[in-house]
Image (cartoon, rainbow, N blue to C red; front, side, top):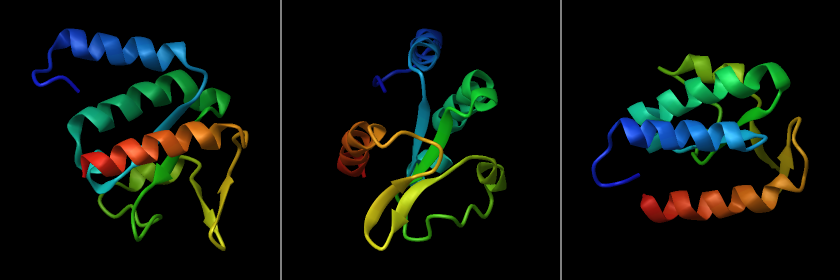
Length: 109
């Protein structure tokens, strides 16, 4: 995000969400609490949900506890089984892209 956000920031985000085939929210505590991330999820939902091209990738200890944000239960979750990453309803080729975003999200925390 730029230091100062504005309407153009929202337009840029909308363009990117429309441009790419899938929408994945890297669901950190900060992202779930963020007004911007929730707005992005809502826009992504409108663009991708009907096509099954939206998912959450939780980066949390309690990865499926959405207390206070129960609407997140609507979305497929990308997660782990026995320390091996798996993907519900998404191609395995996405995992490399996701790992890039995970690294970036952890750097911001």
